[in-house]
Length: 403
Ligand code: ADP
Image 1 (tube, rainbow, N blue to C red):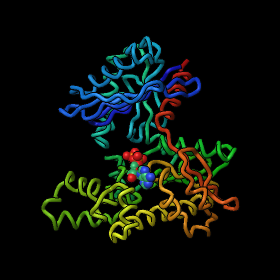
Image 2: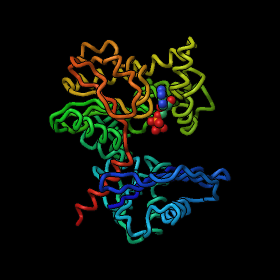
Image 3: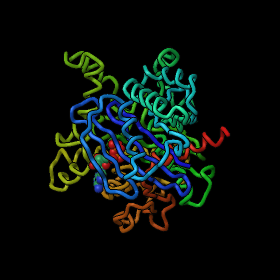
């Protein structure tokens, strides 16, 4: 069975085509900068090198048309007929409180998705455009929506509620939703396989540390809490996002700075100009921060320490909430690649039974692996995330459960 995974952002469409028999990734690529003169298309297949072309693409429909045309290209040789694609899986960042699992696209599902426009306008409009574009181009092929937020629907109300007047929850659906769920779900499943146990027997803390970062507490397969909230701004210090701050700072900025008297400007400040970039004044890229910190740049050292400290706080809190954990997982750009961050995060957590092995931690590998000492009570793992494969699996599962 072949599954096409699409991930529509506001100005991009990423895709990957999987053969589920053996879970092989056949082709993948991106149409980027849609609607701009700089729009381009990149494609790679398991048999061919990356190809990149500047293209004129003004909307998501044209992007999907181009992707399908390329997949059918005889010279590329990936698929001969469009009907070889059994199902299309769409990544959806925000499913609000409507969607607790992946669903087949129907007219009712599309209506429910429209209900998410107000809480995640940028993402949801782009996803919606992608769904319509796929429907138009592939009218006979079913589509499945896979939500980043679905994994978090098991959170108890006392964890997902904010202590604001209750009416804001009722009227505006203001609550914690959680993000990166597809990634946390994937690495949780992989860690159970590595530990040779069922997920139902394990307590885990999973740390997705990328440009955006989130930490999730999972008790016997069910999420109890996660660091991101109503939006992906809450939680640990990130590349350009501030993470947790005293909310009264926002009221202060509103009162004191005329330029921050609107939501867009405040969002821009907190989402794009803060975090590692804001503190260091250099960059939101962890590699630059580590390099500068090693050269003794004080603000880079501070940014590094703040990020590490905020991660440690969540891990320690979730350890307590779960009454102990069996596994701690690191994933995403920083989690998978940065031995110094993993080392600093795990340092002095031996009180929790977390001990990493220096040699294993520094091993240059892109494979999933244990990095804890043999005696460490908590098994610490590095697991490369694979959100696309998870979406492909979910889409296949929804499709097969219908037949
Ligand atoms: P996104 O959240 O955009 O998907 P990624 O998961 O790709 O991001 O993570 C990007 C982050 O990973 C960047 O901060 C980058 O600097 C960091 N990163 C990638 N490789 C390394 C490395 N070898 N050492 C430290 N940080 C790294």
